[in-house]
View 1 (cartoon, rainbow, N blue to C red):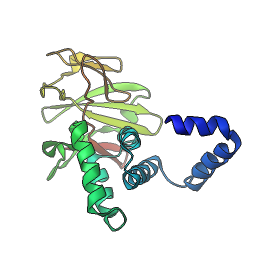
View 2 (view 1 turned 180 degrees about the vertical axis):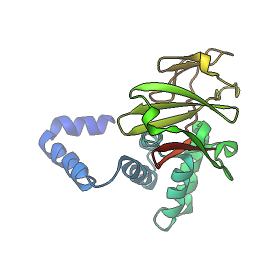
View 3 (view 1 turned 60 degrees about the vertical axis):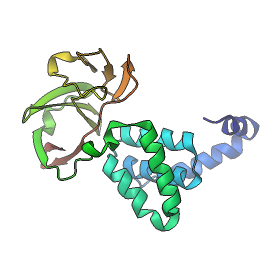
View 4 (view 1 turned 180 degrees about the horizontal axis):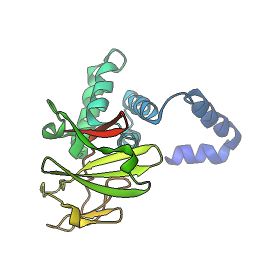
Length: 208
């Protein structure tokens, strides 16, 4: 939270409470992914770097894919214009998030059948090996997060024996990842790449 916003919360608490209440009420019929995408667009429109990075990471945690974010920015072209869209892409490139690397945008990718949704255990990380690829799935209530088992540091394969609880540790340089968020919590500073997924007829499919 910015110092200015913190100041207003203290100086005008009632007015700010009503303002945030309005925002919550206005978006009550939107799902979390849609709200996250709209928040990104507003930050790009205002060109607020810290806010953009904050809501970008929040959107990724909510399951929004890199391709969905890029599509949303391009669809907002009539309002944002090319200058603001390229500003946003500069921010993305500077962050060096694995989801947005060209080789990871899954162009021409296909859907892979992973498991029955009933096999996903709440608040627990599970590993799957599909067609020689390791993926990791974390489920919390209705939120499902799917991560590629490739370390973003030097593209090292992280196999299932490196999973302990909700933590996954790369065998090469000991980068440790929290699978509840995908964030690297020890040694490194880059998150795991999220994979696009869907539920269809009670089964989990993942795209790569």
